[in-house]
Length: 298
Ligand SMILES: Cc1cc2nc3c(=O)[nH]c(=O)nc-3n(C[C@H](O)[C@H](O)[C@H](O)COP(=O)(O)OP(=O)(O)OC[C@H]3O[C@@H](n4cnc5c(N)ncnc54)[C@H](O)[C@@H]3O)c2cc1C
Image 1 (spheres, rainbow, N blue to C red):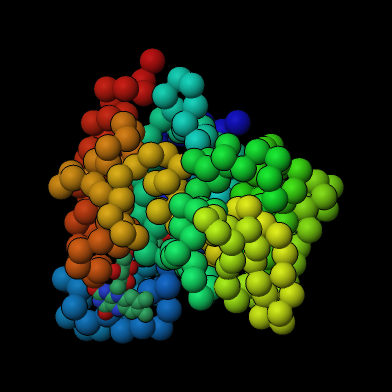
Image 2 (cartoon, rainbow, N blue to C red):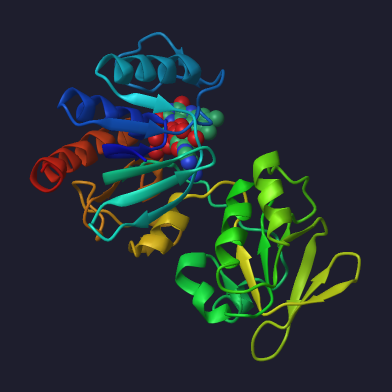
C-alpha cells in the first residue's frame, strides 16, 4: 500500500492552499480530488490580487500548478472511506486505490446530499443512519437498504455485507453510476440494485417498511443514506469528529477533535468564499506540518 505523511482530500481553494504549504515544508503530500464546482467559466471578481476578472477554472489551474511545483502528488480520485489503523495512522480508500497516511486534511467543500423522502427525519436514529461504520453493528442479520446511486453507496453496501446478508441498494430513481468493477463485486456479493424512488418510510416504533413512489413496499429494518460522493460529514461520522449540522467542527488552527485530522474551507462552515478557504487551508497546513514532524517520523 502506498504511504504518505499527509493526504489532503479536496482539490478546491482550501485543499490546494494547504498543499502548497505542506509540500513546500517537505511533508510528503498526496492531494486527492477532482476539479471543484467553481473550476468552470465562473467569473471571480473578489479574490485578492486579480484586478482583472479571473475564471474559476484559471484560478484552480494556477493553484494546481503551484502545488505541483512544490512536489505535491495530485490525483483525481474519489475517496470512499477513511478508517483509523491500529498504529494511529489512517487508511484512505478510493474507487481506484488504497493509501496509508499519518495525517489527513479534509477540504471537501459542502456536498452532503440528502434524498427527498417525506418523513426521513422522523426515522433518524430509528432505522435511518448516515454512518455504516457507526451503526452497522445494530443491524446484524437484519434487512438493510443503502440509498445512493454511486460508488460511495456501493462501498457502503459492501461494508454492510460484513454484518448482514440482507443488503440492497436503492438508486432513488437515478441511473446507477457504479463502474463495472464495483457492479461485479455487488453482483458477486448478492447485493440487489433497485431503481425505484422511496416516497416515505413506515413502521412503529422504528423503521419496518419503505414505500416506493409506485406504491410497492419492501420490508426493511435499516436505511443507510449514501447519496452522491462521500462528504466530509460522512468521514466525520466514521472517524468520530464533532460536527455542527452539515459542518465539521475545527478550531482556529484547523484542528478537529481527532488527532491527525484537520479541516479547512467550506466544510467547516462560516463565510463560504475562496479567500476564507485559502486562509484556512494555510492554517490547517501549519497544524498538519507540526503534527507530521512530531508524530509521524520514525
Ligand atoms: C458557481 C460558483 C461560483 C462561485 N463564485 C465565487 C466567487 O466569485 N468568489 C468567491 O469567493 N467564492 C465563490 N464561490 C464559492 C467558492 O467556490 C467556495 O467558497 C470555495 O470553492 C470553497 O473552497 P473549498 O476548497 O472549501 O471547497 P470546494 O471548492 O468545494 O472544493 C471541494 C473539493 O473536494 C473534492 N471532494 C469532495 N468530496 C470528495 C471525495 N469524497 N473524494 C475526493 N474529493 C472530494 C471536490 O472534488 C473538490 O475538489 C463560488 C462557488 C460556486 C459553486
